[in-house]
Length: 431
Image 1 (cartoon, rainbow, N blue to C red):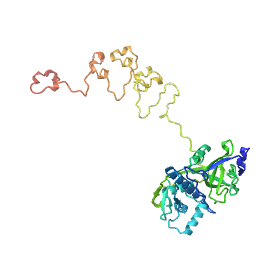
Image 2: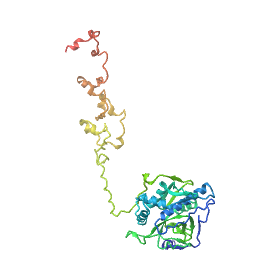
Image 3: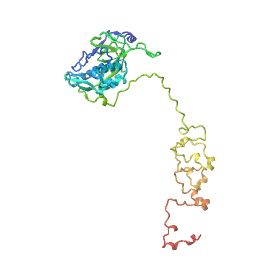
Image 4: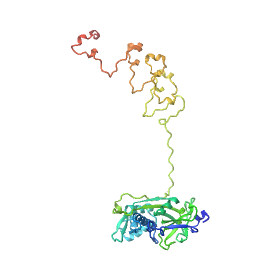
């Protein structure tokens, strides 16, 4: 225990000056909430044993919270959960015992799961439920959990806190060659090594699911924190079926939630459209090459100031400025500025700007006349509104009437017959 690295290199470490406690010996609100030890024998069903043990521990805890000192009387059938999971992976619901055994070997032992086993087992428990009995009643019913959650890694303080509050924490131990030989006064400390060059384990581990039921401290550092756990290898394993493992070698933490009066389910699997997450498999093909880089932006999307005389192009939704050089008349282009400062691109012209002067005063202003935007009407004092005979005296010409205004009532064209016709100037109409 003096060398921290020695904890990872040795598979089993002796408990020297270690202090620990377990819910196997401690009461929670006057109740024993530790689950009974199960025996999976030679079947690869450690996930199902751990989930059922965690559910029983959570039921006992929830019952103690409602009625301290009361005993939980629920009995859960693990075989019904295994059968539901096999049906989830394609087994016929009406399959005989021989077919069930063959499917269990093909899916569970050989690892041909369609869905992730951690997620799939708890999904079946939540949505379909397991057979359960209450107070020795022979009439079973389907009992389901409220929710479940998984996390690949949890800090030592977080795991300690959850176990301290009586929660059943699921965890994965990488079982090595000496895992089954673990003794009551030893702590399991082996973690497999991975060869990056060969892309394979140096010693292939066997993931094994357990339930943490206590906390222990074998040193002053968090690296020495360990947890007593409830195993599924019968009462002959370690200390009556319970062992101890360092926190640093644990992975794949999980937790389930269940109430003191759990949900009773009656919906079969065939009527549930949703499914859990598919199993993540490592592809054997070469990785997909990265996509090509995007093309450089065009002139319609950015302004490249490559030299004087260039103005930013207009976007399709924007109109061209009225005072821009590309809007000036051909005769005035020699007098315009070669480049408009960017700071003035979005500033409107003021009323005292000489470019707003009337036609008669333009001799005293600069020669550049801002062209008007296409959507605005032409000014009434513009020379284009003067009659041909008066264009030489443009400053004396009165603005002509806008075409959209109605004609005046005193206009001869508006004379009403026959009362006003004698007053019409007939000489005007002889031509």
